[in-house]
Amino acid sequence: MAILSVDLAYSRWSDLGLVILDRPRPSDSPKKLASANRPRSRPALVDCEIFSWDGSDLIEEQRNAPIQPEILAGRLHHVCLKRDIRIIMLDGPQAWKSCSNGCAHSRLSERLLNTAAKTGLPGMVKPATYRTFAEFCVDVYDSLCRRGWRRMATSDQPTSANDRILVESYPYASWKSLGLKPLRSKRTARVSDLAEAFAALNSLVPLKVNRPPNHDQLQAIVAGLSGLALEVRDHSGARIVGTPPHRENGQWREGFIVLPVAPREGEALHWLQ
Image 1 (cartoon, rainbow, N blue to C red):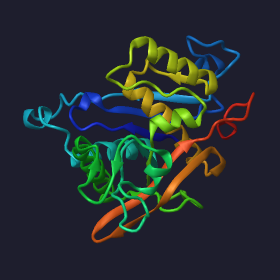
Image 2 (image 1 turned 30 degrees about the horizontal axis):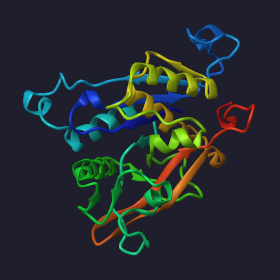
Image 3 (image 1 turned 90 degrees about the horizontal axis):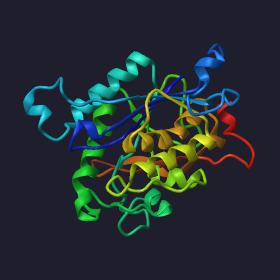
Image 4 (image 1 turned 135 degrees about the vertical axis):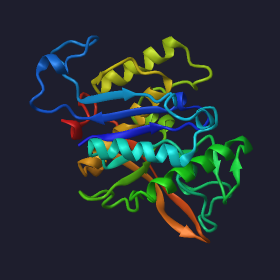
């Protein structure tokens, strides 16, 4: 079963990174599995279906305004219903800091991963410019939960066959967790940086893509790999960081961030085989 990985953005629809990740079916022919830039003797371990929304189908008022969480959640939910997807990976904070987590300005997961941005108590973030994005992300999670999804609640049994689970990802740490150099920021990354990062990832996890990924889509691919491990309930394929999400004073607090696990030397990610 496939998973959906999203590199979130709130200003423009075209800034979203949207990728459906799946393992190739045993019935797929060697020709279908072979990538144009990879020898056929090395079949893909992951199918990456990249797609995009430009907002052109929205009314003008919605098309020219920042993305509304309810509209985005509705579209993500619709895609998942059509494709029978039960795990969505979202690159953005799912909740606020708990008052009693022992961290001054961040959630425990953010402290352990030393994230660049910190989600503090409700409405408080570091840096201050991060607040609009943080509030948007929490609203997206809440909007999806109103449609029957839930935040991943436990690290012991993160998914079950009948659940629709929201999992927080973090691309920068995902690159590092796989032993790869993190992709440069979107503002500074050059085309050559994208090509280098994709080649490095492709050498570790053979990928079949339907188009060359842009920055947002490549971030969604690397961050979504751990979702495939969760989907087959293989805990060894994912590193789960932080504490369970919970309600506190009417707000969601804490939550896990999940990263892919690097393969042992000379081996591919065993849970994909």
